[in-house]
Structures are given as C-alpha cells and as structure tokens.
Image 1 (cartoon, rainbow, N blue to C red):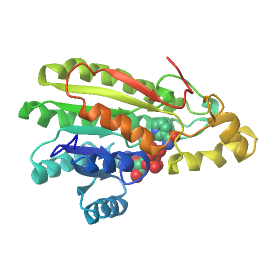
Image 2: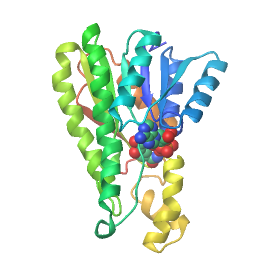
Image 3: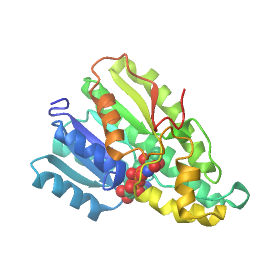
Image 4: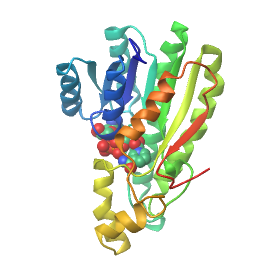
Length: 260
Ligand code: NAD
C-alpha cells in the first residue's frame, strides 16, 4: 500500500473527482477526510468508505470561510493527530461572457478556488511544519490553468492563479519537506460538467450534443472524456512520490487537449 497510515484531507470530496481521489487514497491505506460544504453527502461518502473497510471521516467546511477551515482542520488533528496530504479540490463553475459577468459572481469564483486553496494550505502547513515530517499539497487545476475558453473568465483566472500559489508553496515548503503540485484535468463528466452542458448550449446557441463534441472534446486526440479514475491516479502519484524531486509542477491529464 502506497499511503499506509497517511492522513489525507480532500476538499470537495463528497462528490465527483474529489470523491474518487479520496477513495483511491483510502484503498492505498490512507485515513481520508471528506471535507465538504455538503455535510450530508460528506457523511454518506465517509460512511460508504467505512462500510467497505476503509478509514474515513467527514468534516463540514466552506473553504472560503477561514473559521470553518481552521475548525475543520483542528477536528482532523483531534481525530488523527497529524496531516500528510492536502488535496485542495473544492470548486464550482460559472458560465458567462465577460461583458455580462457580475462582480459578485467573479468574487465568488475567486473565493472558492483561490481563497479556498490559500486558507486550507495555510491551516495544513502549520501542522505539517510543526510535525517536521514533510507533506504533499495538491491543487486541482485544470487545462484552464494553461489555456482559456470563452465564457469562463473567473475560472480560467483562478485556475492559472493556482499554479502561482503552488510554485510559491513548493519554494517555501521545501525546507520542511513539503511538496506542492497541480493536477490539470481535461473535461471529466461530473455534476460540475453536467450542469454546464445545457448552460453552454443556451449561451452559444448550439445543441447539447455539439457542446460535448464541438466545444468540450473538440481538441482532444480521441474525443474522449478524462475520467475521475485518471485524475485519481495522478493524485496518487503526487501524494506518494517519495523525494523532493517532484515539486512545483503542473501535470495535464486531458486526452491531449493541451500539450506542452
Ligand atoms: P463536483 O461538483 O462533482 O464536486 C465539487 C464538490 O465541491 C462538491 O462536493 C461540492 O459540494 C464541493 N464544494 C463546492 N463549493 C465548496 C466550498 N465552498 N467549500 C467546500 N466544498 C465545496 O465537481 P468536480 O467536477 O468533481 O470538480 C472538482 C474540482 O475539479 C474543481 O476544482 C473543478 O474546477 C476541477 N476540475 C473539474 C473538471 C471537470 O471536467 N469536471 C476539469 C478540470 C478541473
């Protein structure tokens, strides 16, 4: 097992990509924390993991709220004593052309993606540094950390911003053995993407089928969605890598949508 007895917090893991990462980590021996805004779903996910013999707890947390983040991380320490891995994954999407985008929606998007990453990083680093046994911080970026698409200005801006945060955490953290990396998935068919398909069809004046084929998967090499399992395998690589060689990086997993 590649993560035996490691404690891993995954934000936004009641659903979608985060849930798959938490499941992969738990299967590899980690004690996983399902940290989510949706506490009912977080509890249900943690219980399902425990029922199948895995170690998991749920923690309620709005990642944009400093007090809730700190209280949640303190609960993890009370239960498990230490933290080895943070996956800052919670996120949402908002579709709008820039000339119609409301300031409140712009701020909400930056708060969830960037404030959330900062607050959870800060809270976890405190315990990682104190313990002195290193750690791995993983940010959920996107192809939109490297590339832009129409109608997604705050998302693209925030996902690019995570690369800067990651590089800074990598430089500051290394004297404590803390590594930081970004995963950049292409489109993954989760609730976040399912919601966008009719929204984009309406905004672009095309069918939902064309949103999938001609917008979302247009530039992939094989017309395929990336899966939650694909992303979880990259999260496992970043979490389990056992030297400081792999830090400050962002890795695309997107069926070749974006190549660098
Ligand atoms: P999802 O909607 O399935 O899951 C997101 C989870 O985050 C939900 O459980 C939700 O309750 C939680 N959440 C939302 N706001 C929160 C907050 N303020 N505090 C705590 N939890 C909150 O979405 P997903 O597709 O699994 O997305 C997860 C991450 O992956 C996001 O950061 C997203 O930007 C990124 N991503 C998704 C795709 C994709 O195609 N699905 C591609 C690239 C990157």
